[in-house]
Length: 400
Ligand code: C5P
Image (cartoon, rainbow, N blue to C red; front, side, top):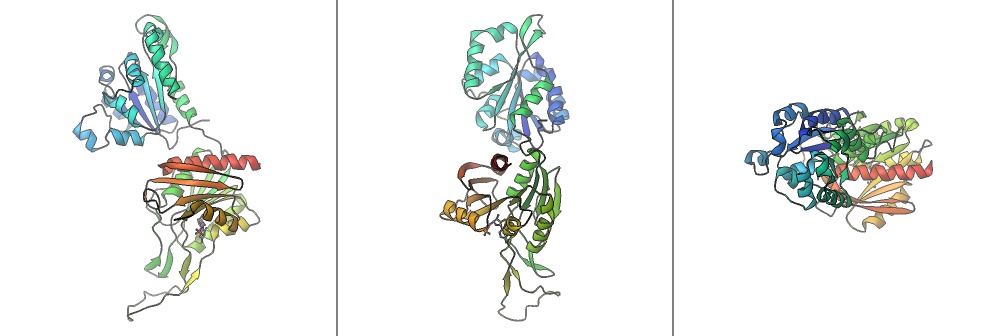
C-alpha cells in the first residue's frame, strides 16, 4: 500500500468552509507516515484556528509572508525547500485563480511558486463557482503545468446547493498524495547499504579516517525503505540518526565492515557500497597510547580489503552498486572502475564541484550500468537517493 513515510507534506489551507476538514486531513497524512507542516491563508483562519492545526501537526503553523519571527525560524524559502509535496486543501476558487497566473501575494501562493516539490490541489467551492468557465480555464492551466487536482466531489454543499464542489474526503486526498510517490518498487527485496567513513585505529585514542558525513548512504537507506525494501545499513561512525524501519549495524574499521557485509550476503539481493572506506590502515595497532618521543615518526600502512569488490566476487553475489568520486574524466574513470570491480552499477560523482560532495546537503551524479547511463541533476541527497533506488529497481527488474 502507498505510504508517506519519510515524506514532508506541507499542507496549505485556504479560506473555505471545508477548511474544518483540514484537521482530519493532517491526521490522515500522519497515519500514512508523513511529517506535516501547515501554512494558512488569512481567509482560512476565519474557519479554523492555527492553534488547532499546530496541535495536530505538532509543528508551528505559518500564516504570514512578511513575518519577522517566522522568517527567522523557517521562512517561506525554507518551507518551500523542506516540502516533498505541497498539498493545498481546500483550494478555493480565488487561490486557484491566483496560482494559475503565478501570483505571490500571500504565504501560500508564494510557497507554491518557490517550491520545486509537486503541487496537489483539492478544490472546494460552490458548485456554480466550480462550473464557471473562469475556474475551468484556471484548472486547465494548472493541470497542463503538472499540478495534480484531486476532486472536487459531488453532493450536498454547505450552502444548500447540490453538485460538484465539495472538497474530496481527507482519506481520499491523503491516499492520492501517497500514490504520487512511487513506492514499493523494491517490495520484498533485501538491500544492504554501507555508509560513512571507516576509522582505522593507530592506538587506543587515535585513528585514520576521512570526512565522509554518511548523508548519501543514509538517504539511500531511507529511499530503499520507502521503496519497500528490507534494508540493512552498515555504517561507520557518523553524526546521523539511523532512518526508521531499518536494521542498523554500527562498525568502526573496514575489516569490521567487510565481515558484516559478507555475513549478510546469504540474505541480500542488492548491495550498495556507499561508504568511504579507508584505503589503508596502520600495519600495527598499538595497545598503549603512542608517546611523542621522536621529532619524526613513520607510519606503516597496509591496504584495506575492497569491500564492494569482495561482495561482487562472492558466491552469493547480489546486484552490486558502487560509488566513484572523481575529479576529472569522471564518467570514463567510473566506468573503468565499474568494470575492474565487476559491479553492476556505478554512481559517479564529480567531487571537483564545490556544490556537492562529502558534507553537502546536495548531490549530482551520473549513474552507469553496462549498457546505459543517466545524469542526475543537482538535487537534495534525498532526491538523488530516490532516483538511484528507482534506477536500481528498474535494472534489477530487467535481470529478474
Ligand atoms: O576505488 P574507490 O575507493 O574509488 O571505489 C569506490 C567504491 O568502492 C565505493 O563504492 C566504495 O564504497 C567502495 N570501496 C570499498 N572498499 C574499499 C574501497 C572502496 O568497498 N576498501
